[in-house]
Length: 125
Image (cartoon, rainbow, N blue to C red):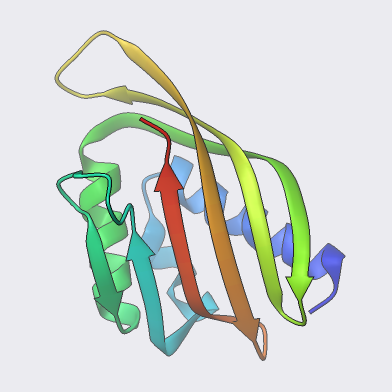
C-alpha cells in the first residue's frame, strides 16, 4: 500500500466515523481482522474484537454514544511493510453532556491487500 493510498484510506474511515456510519467502510476490513481497543484503559468498550462484523459493531456502539466524534491524524509513520503508526487528536462531544472532549490517540494499523488485518487504538486519558 502506498503512503498516498494509506492516507486516503485513513481519511475515508475517519470521515465514516465522523458521519456516524462505520458500516460504510466494512469493505476496507479483512474478514478476519483483529482489533484491540483501548486495552488497559478501563473503558466500556475495551477488548479484543475478531472479525469484520465484530469490529463494525464495536465502531457502531462507539459512535452512537457521541453527538460527534472526529479523529484527526497528526502523523503517520511507516513501521514496516504494510504496518503504520498513526498519532492524532480526537475531538468529541458526548450526547449526555454539553462538555466537549479532546484527547490524543495512537493507532497501529496493519494492511494486507489494501485491507486492515490487524490494529489497535489507545486514547490518552
